[in-house]
Length: 114
Image 1: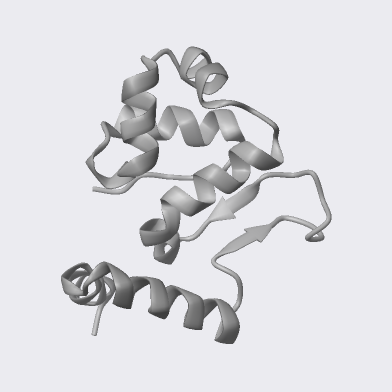
Image 2 (image 1 turned 90 degrees about the vertical axis):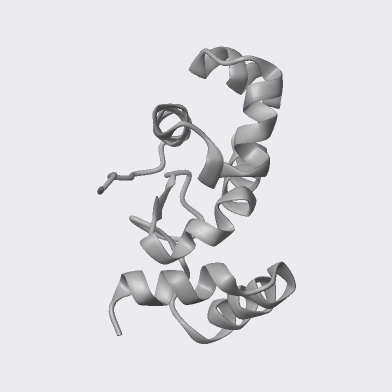
C-alpha cells in the first residue's frame, strides 16, 4: 500500500476515528512533529507528511508556544483575520501559498509536492 492509498483511506474516516488514530500514533510511534534538537529547544518543529490531519492542532500549538495572536499572524502573513481563522480551522482547504507562508513564518520546515 502506498502513501496515496493510505491517505485516501484516512480521508474517508469520520473525524472522531481520525482523532483516535492520531492519539494512538502519538503513543506508539515517533512523534509526528520532531524538532531538530531536544524537545526543550526553542527551534520550530519539522512537519511530517503524516501530520497533515493534525495540522490545525500543530498550528495552534505553535502559535501559543511563540506567543503570537491570530491578529498578529494574520498581519504578518498578509491576510485578513477571517481568512486566517479559516486557514487555521481547515488548512486543507486554504490556498497553498497562504499555508506555506504561515508555516514558513512559524519556522516550520515544509516542502510542497504535487
